[in-house]
Structure formats: C-alpha cells, structure tokens
Image 1 (cartoon, one colour):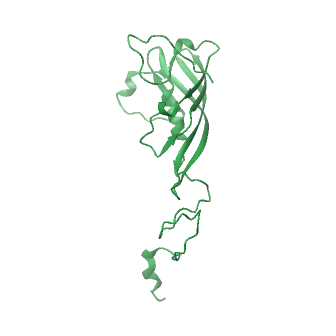
Image 2 (tube, rainbow, N blue to C red):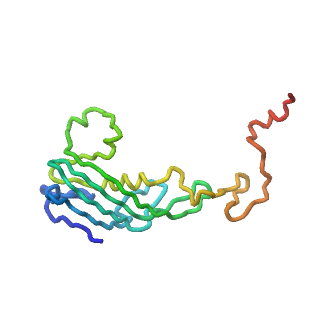
Image 3 (cartoon, rainbow, N blue to C red):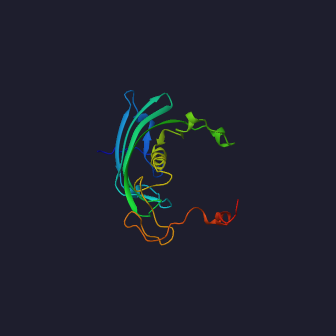
Length: 189
C-alpha cells in the first residue's frame, strides 16, 4: 500500500495532525487514497481496547461542487479483554463506510441541532481542505462490540472462587436462584 502525500502549504503554518486532503486534488475522476498508519497514530489510550497492528485505510473520494463523498474501508487488529473471563484476545476488524463532507456553516454552532439518521455520516470542513481522520476514528469505534467476548460460548469466571471456567470446572456448589429471594422458599403456601 502506498500513502498519498500532500506537499502543499496550508496558510502560513502546517495543518494539525490528521489525514488532510486538498479539495482541489479531487478531480473529475475522483481521488483514490491508500494509507497504512501505525497504531501510535491513533489515540485510544482511554479505551478498553488497543490497536495491535497497522491500520489500513482505502478510500475513494468524489465531489460535486463543494460537497465531497467518501467510500472507504478500514482494516486492523484490535485487542480486547473478554467481558466474561477477563482474558485478552485479538479480533480483526474490516469495516466499510461512507461519509459526506460539506462546507462548514457557522450558524450550526450557535445552537444545538438534532441530527437525523441520514446526517450521522456528515462531516464539515472549512477552507480548501478536509480531514478524513475523524471518520476513520468513528468507524473503528463503531466496530467495537458493546461487550467483547473471546467466544460466544465463554463460560466466564466462577462467582465464588474466581476459577476460569473455560480452563477447569471448579468444585464450588452452585446455588439455586438469587439469594435475595431465599426467604420466599421458607414461606408455606
């Protein structure tokens, strides 16, 4: 994979970190971008997962006047902690997405607006460049399961002794039902 490099100067100072695209580089035939970024390029330090392999980004951009349309794919490998047995495991993600970039209008920031479902993949840009980094970050986050599991049939931990039940069955006595309702067992009909 090759990385598209833009050597143009932006105003009098370089752009902030991101994946910046010059709008004028998106010609009539569009623009194809193939990138490989290292895990350190992404800041997910405060999350319950980490990126363990390079992130591959393949995008095609097209434009209609000032609006830019992106169709892309993000692939990488993530490491999670299982929500049942607390073992670490890795999982590949390979997600396709689309986004629309429209010129930023200042009046949108004056008050809160409610976004419809069709507007969830809309991003704003100003000037002659746009940053596709936020849409790539969003796609990685959207691929994260709510409760990561090392496998669907993970048995988890024994609630009494903490034994990992995928490895060995423990000798703890299984209790029937919820202890909070044990008083009800003594009530005679």
